[in-house]
Image 1 (tube, helix red, strand yellow):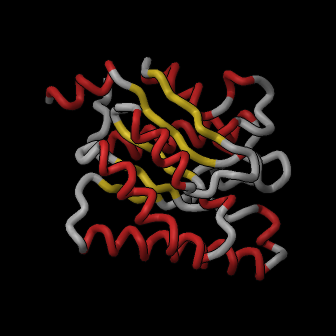
Image 2 (cartoon, helix red, strand yellow):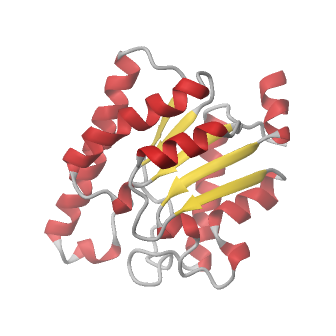
Length: 195
């Protein structure tokens, strides 16, 4: 389709946290945004803010000025709690939609951090964040928002515990797996075509 071929003339915008920024990658080229860029031959614009990827309105306004193929929002690791997600998710989408009414937006869940195997409270907290994001996503779909997609994070970096440096930030291996995981989702959603 023309939409799918048009994708390669534009960019993918990522908005997120230190993980998006590429924290703990051995070199800049090993951040998932750069791996995706090479694999798909498409520019990726990385709005990754260490400790500060919080779905904030000034950033929403800034990224809505650009005209990407689609947006990937991966802010959950920096969101304080379910209330903050409820307060900010739909306003973020609405701000982007004012300028980009048709542009797809992909919302990515938080990862279940490795230490949660031993720390049930951590697991519970992450599940609460994910459920809050899923609720906001469901509301938008029920309200007739188009081109909004939701990515669950199960096995995003594999299931062998080799994907992170510290239980949270990705190793190069984790970034490669996450890049491939996202590409598969983009193909499933019809956002890109398989070459």
